[in-house]
Length: 255
Ligand SMILES: [Zn+2]
Ligand SMILES: [Zn+2]
Image (tube, rainbow, N blue to C red; front, side, top):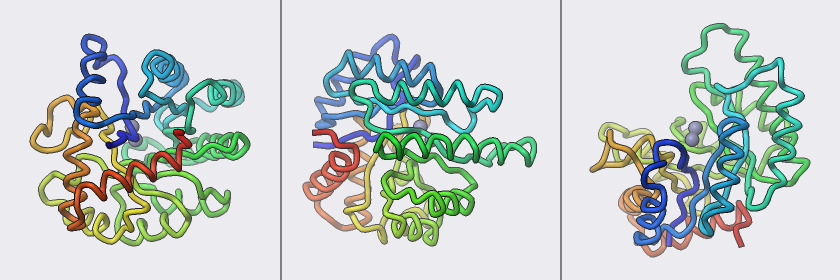
């Protein structure tokens, strides 16, 4: 059994969502966490979790979806959504400096991020962290806000950043990127990360693993990612399935 800990089963699946979910089950992917990125998609995640037994939801505002003018109202809404049935985490939230237009956007992102970290803490929920080109700033915030329950999703940081996330108590989650060519550093990170700290995810519809790179991704393909973790760590697939599944069940309280 495997768990896809990070999927976005939104409009890209409107025509065949039930089949996609059935294919996941047929491939032993028995649970899926569907991730919100803004208020509307957080509500959609809750609706999907209500409709499908094996889907759970997370709610949160992605760093690219923030709007400071409405921060108070948005946070009240996240607080409300987070208490709906089958919501297992706050996310995805974080920092993304990849395509910043102005330096001041960093402060806007940090504020949005910390407000949501506070909600997670208040409601005793783990966090799903999105980070791009911002590992130093994120680690600083996680340390000062004492965040130690969560996962750095689609981890693509270097070995030093990986070490510091793990020291902070967090998990690392890997996507299809670890099946792509010329990813030596991330393969080294997978090798060095204790299996007890690893989870697997598709981040579908993006980042389909080989041999489907470039096509629409789906939760069933999390198996290829887990197989790649098994290859890199030279550990049997049974052990990879058991441990990554337990990691997700424990972190997100899925029982
Ligand atoms: Zn993300
Ligand atoms: Zn995502």
